[in-house]
Each structure stands twice: as C-alpha cells, then as structure tokens.
Image 1 (cartoon, one colour):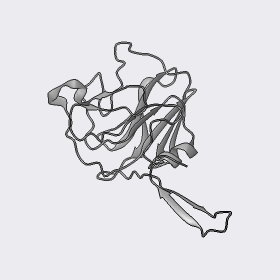
Image 2 (cartoon, helix red, strand yellow; image 1 turned 30 degrees about the vertical axis):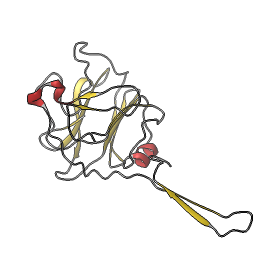
Image 3 (cartoon, one colour; image 1 turned 120 degrees about the horizontal axis):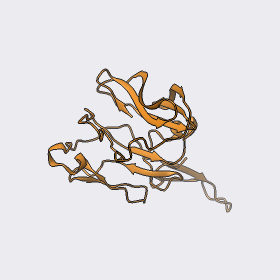
Length: 193
C-alpha cells in the first residue's frame, strides 16, 4: 500500500489475479492533510477505504501468496526491493488478521486502539518521539525498526497531529435510594464503543 508520486493510492498483493502487480485505485490522497486509508483482502477481493468510505473494489482471485520468498519484510513507508520511500507523515498503523468490515473501519478510524482488540496483530502509534524503534501495541512483540536499522535511512520524528481521539465514556445513573443523579466521566477506555 502506498501513495504514488502522482498522489494516487496503490496496492499490490501476490494472488492468482492480479498476480504480483500493483493496482492503481484512481483515488488521490490530498497533500498536507491527514487521510485514513484502509485496505482489506478476502478471497481475492480487495476493498480500499478512504476516511472510512469504500472508494475502490478490485475483484481478483486466490489467496495471498509468497511470490518472492526472500522479500518478506513488512515495510511501513518503503519497499523492500526498491529504494522508494514515502514522503510525508505516517501515524497509527494497524495490521489485522481478518478482513475488517466497513462498519468496523469507520467506527475505529479516528480512535486510539488499546492493542487488545480481537484480530489485531500489529499496532504502531509512532509516539516515541526519539530513538530507532517503535513499539507494537498488539502484545505480539513486532517492534518496528525505523529506517530498517540504517542510520542514513532513519526518518525524522515529528509531532503527529493525526485526528485521533481518546473516547470518553459518560455514564449517568440514579441511586435507587433516591440520591440525585451523578455523572462520571473517564478517558481510560480507549477504543470503547
């Protein structure tokens, strides 16, 4: 998944169809504005969502294969086989072992996840601000090495500004003994729905 030099969102999966080839979704991501992009793959069908809205459907076939067995690194913001790197800011990257539904994507796109969500196998917030690694909040220990561990390729840390929020849960209750209604507010439930 990447933003090409012409601004279009593209992806590539090694499956029966389209094979190992990039697909241009025709979707243009605006410059200087945060854009949430989600791509799902299920049974060859690839759905691309932008800011929670389905914008592109590709009807392919087959499962994801291992086309180049020597190129298996998960790269965020760069390609393993080429010196191509994303220009811009990336934040709150999430990887799931299930194809998320449109409703799930829309509900969670601006929420900070806890890392304990069902099916989440990688969650990198990039909140560290310094250093050469970024923590995986999924609990599976997929610590990210920035710049692939190469000092010259190290990205610069920057304040995010991504429109993520901590969900506040508001509970109002009335005591059965006749006490006045009381309100409790907490921000501890990140991702609460």
